[in-house]
Image (cartoon, rainbow, N blue to C red; front, side):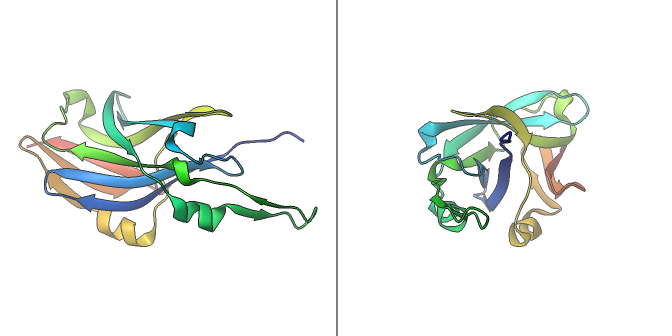
Length: 168
């Protein structure tokens, strides 16, 4: 059999500090141990849907031991084998400092968050999506203003986070 490695990405929480938007998220591959942030590198970018222009976003590692508790134990009912996996190192925080984000004209309109990742098994790029209902309610149609731009958060038909940006 051929093994496929599907990346699972998920927004865990959202917070607004008055000047920064924090998105806590994780990206893991089922049955692949990532016990520390050093075991997987993740970069985040704002990517415009029309122009494909990207802007790097600040990202910080964040441990997610609850993910290991909820998804780390696997039982194969066919073989009867049990296994434990550690996903503690798969979490991160994306930080939008609204005043520091230099928003070129090529990023006005609809944007997504692109995640580029690399671990010992796979590297790739995915659009950040999947969110709890509670976090989705907080973010849906929420608008934030900087001194020169408006950022409106929402979700597309695939449940991926969208950020509509306009100049003010």
